[in-house]
Image (cartoon, rainbow, N blue to C red; front, side):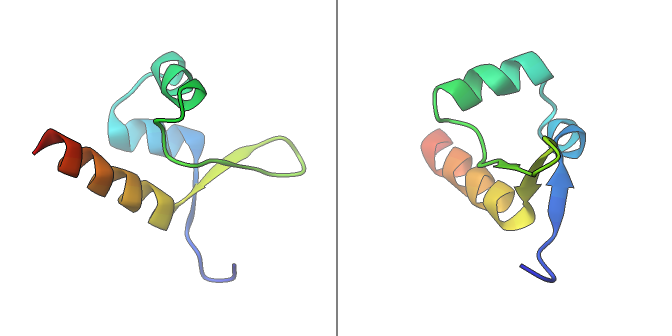
Length: 62
């Protein structure tokens, strides 16, 4: 995993312009980018997972 860019949840929320509550609703339905929970309880999202999620969003919008 060395070299993999990991984004903090606030960074993800800022990029996708979504509130934390809306994000968690999407996550509960399985429609949000994949998150990784660290041993300290913090959440991270791989850059590649967020990019793949954007791709899926664009394909569904087309």
